[in-house]
Structures are given as C-alpha cells and as structure tokens.
Length: 187
Image (cartoon, rainbow, N blue to C red; front, side, top):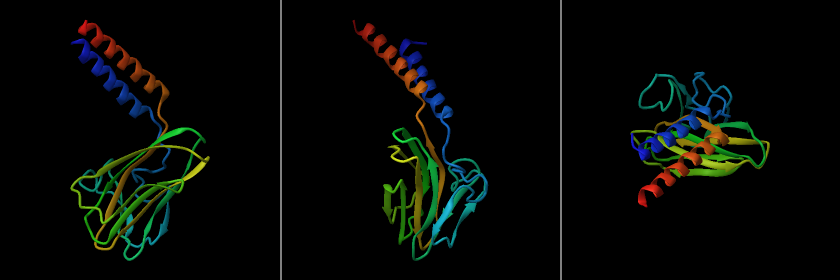
C-alpha cells in the first residue's frame, strides 16, 4: 500500500468513525416507531402520516418514513431540541418530492429558515440536505412544513448532532501526515 493510499484510508476511517460516533439529538428522526412519536404535528394534518413498507424508493433509511399531503394549506411537524448555547451542530435530513403543483416544503431551526422550496421538481431518489448551525438558545424548535395538493412529499433520516472533537483531531493528523508525505515526495 502506498503512503498516499494509506493516508486516504486513514482519512476515510476517521470520517466514518466520526459519523458513527455522533449522537442523534432528534427523537425518532427516521420514524421507526411507525408514528410521529417525539414530534408535534402542526397546521393541516390531513393526509400526513408514517409508513413502514421496508427499504424502498420512499424510505431513505431504515424501514419507515413520514409522508405529507396537506391540501389547501400548510401542515407539518416540529420537535424541540435540547442544545448548548454557542455549540456547533450538524442537521441532516432526506426529502423526496413528487413534482406536484401546488406544493411547498420548508425546514427551519429556531425560527431561522434553512430551506424553502415552492413546487419542487420530482425526484426519483431522496435529496439529502445538510446544514451547520450554532445554538442561540438552550431549546430550539426544529420544524418541517409541507403542502402537496396532488400527492405526497416524504421526509426521512432527520438527524442533529455535535461534531466529535476527537474525530476532527484525527482528520487533522491524517491530513497533516498526507501533506508531509507529499512534500517529501516532491523534493
């Protein structure tokens, strides 16, 4: 194994370890309870629910996903996250639009809009979103809002986590070693 290959492996392992070590602060983020446990439904809740068909095109992670099809007005879900003021967090989720019109989707944390889509184009696979944010309050509401008159929008794999300092340190060491090795090879 070459030095560069060894360093690439070390970087990959440190990133994989980081993803596994992070604790999800979102309760029931993949809806594996088969319902909205941990979430509060808001607005128009008609045609909103959780399905558990097992792995497939409308499930991004696990066996279940949430679906939303409120007609004529907005409906959604919210969950209060316990955070530490000033700490940095990562929020990720998977969203699957059906291309219906009229439709809308939005996500926010602590009242700050992260994404707002009107009539999103249909997608054959989930769109993965990721956002970094800094907590400004000890409790912040994570909210998702939907409208889809002609069909359903799907949400899955919702996760909020704190970056692992040890993982970031390992990544830094691996990158430094890789650059040092490249520098030696150039001489």
